[in-house]
Image (cartoon, rainbow, N blue to C red; front, side):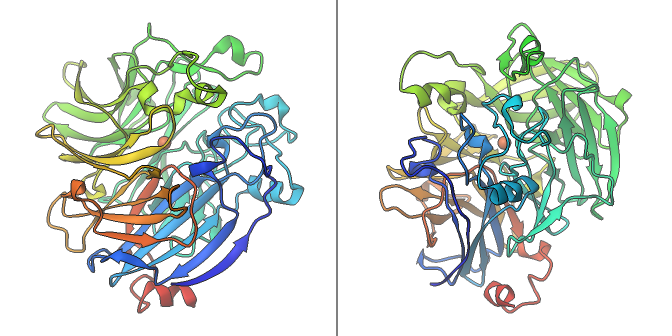
Length: 504
Ligand SMILES: [Fe+2]
C-alpha cells in the first residue's frame, strides 16, 4: 500500500469525549489520506470500474451545548476501482461554514438539537436558519461532478469525484435557489442526465421543485404550496413524474413561534403524496392521501398502467416514546434507531385515474437506507438493497437484498463489532441484467480497529464479500453513498490507471 497524509485539520473536540456519536464507531477523523494500490483480501473483480463515494458526519468542533450527529462536518470517502486495483481518498468538504469555524477554532452555529438563537453567527443555512452548511448528508454524481448536500437544505457543494477537492458550490448558471437551498436528497436520472430536486422552508409556499439539465443549468423551478412548514427528506421519480411528500411529522407551530424547532407526529393527519409531471406546473400537482407515517427514504418508483408504484420505508412509530430504557444518549437519540421507528419496506400504489392510494407492506423486516441499481431508477425493478440496524442505535450491522417479486430476503450479517454503511450497487462493465453487478460498502471495525471496503456479488449477498480492501485508518460510521461508473467521470479513461490519474 502506498499511503500519504495529504491534510490534517485541528480538532477542538474534548480528549475525554463521551458522546456516542463522536466516539467508538462514530469517532471522527482529522486526517485526510491518499492511498493507492490498497491491500486486498480476496480479489477485486476486473469488471468493477468506477468509484464508490460515501459522505460522513465528521465533526471537527464540539457543539455549543448538544451535539446531534447530523451536525457533523461533511467528509467524503472515495474508493475507486479499475483493472482489479483500488485507491482511496478522504477529504473534508470545504464549505463556507467549515472554513469559518476553522479560522475561529470553535463552533459558530447551533445544531439541530439546539436553539437557533444560540448561534454566535447571525447568518447561516438550513430551512430553520442559522445553521452551519455541514454538507454531510448525501452525495450524488451529476454531470461528472460529485455533489454533497446538507440535511436541512442548503448549498450543494461540488467535489472532484476522484480527488475529492472542493470545487465550490453548485450555481446552475446563476439560477441556484439561494434563498431556500436544496434538500438532502436529489435524484439523478441516468437516462436523461437530469437532476431532480426540491427544497422546503418556513415561508410560503413552503416547498419548491426543480429540474437541472444534463448541461448543469436550472431548467425548471416551481412553487409547491403546502399547508405549512414541513420536513420532507427525500423524493422519488418515474419516467414522467416526480413524487414529493407532505408527511404529518413537522415542527410544532406554537414552539416555532418561540424559536424552538421540535418535530411532532400527527397521527390524525394523512400522509400526502404529491405527483407532478417532471416539467409540471404548481397547479398540476396531484395529492394522494395515505396512512399517516413518516418516510425518511424512498427506494424507487415506476409507472404501471394507471398507477404509479412508489416504494419506501414506512415508519410504524415516527415519534417513539421515551421508555426510560438505556442511558441519556440512547434515549435522546431513539429517533435514529431503526427498531424504534419500525422502518419497513412498503409500497404505495397511486392510481392516476381514481385518485386513490392503495398500500401494502412488502416486508416484515426492519430495514432502511435502501438502494437500487441506478440504471433502473424510475423504472420497473425487482431488487432493493438495504441495511439492518443495531438495536437502539444509528449503526448498521448487515445488508439485505429484498426480492420484491418473491418477497424473499437474502442477508449478510457483519461480524460482531463491525458496522457497515449505506451500500451502493455497482453494475459490472457490460452488465446484462438488474442484479448483474456488485454491492459495495465501507465498514468500521471496532474489534480490529480498522476499516475496509467490502465488495459483494449483488446476486449472492449472503455468500459474503468477494474482496475486502483495507483502508489506511478506521473511519467513522457515516450516512449516504453512491456509485459512479468510470465512464461517467471526466478524465477516467485518459489515464492508464486511477493511480496515475491522481498523481498528475
Ligand atoms: Fe437521508
